[in-house]
Length: 155
View 1 (cartoon, rainbow, N blue to C red):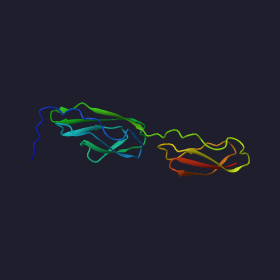
View 2: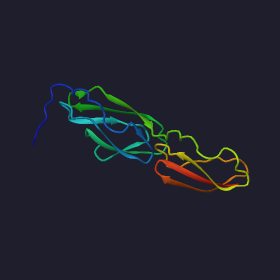
View 3: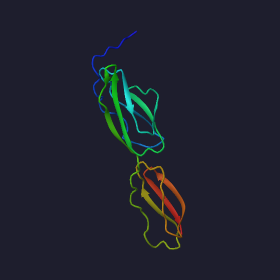
View 4: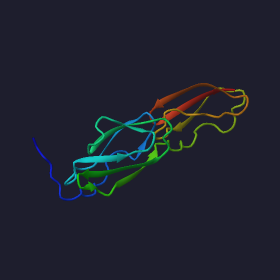
């Protein structure tokens, strides 16, 4: 049987590795390098996060819960002598970037059908919300490839 003997508190953990931007539903991993004299690690997470697995390790996996809109993650190392200072990292919601310019005719589309508009895709977007003027309906919208969305309208 190994017996740990500590004569000083652990040093402050180094930088926290893992994503800065997350979304509800994500499962992500955060870690710090092992710390001298550490017997365990104490993680402080945003209220919507849940640790999956070993909570006292220098590597944790977390589930991001509904309602996350930003916060911070902190970790400290501990042993029988006490706790190290905390290392903290700011986390943000992974919001989509603004879509690019809408391509398509700006005039001359009265009584036309099958008019096509497109826009370069938005980073991190999972869907798009198109707003059309009165009397215009969307016939179909499809993702031509990951970086462009095409909209076909009926007038």
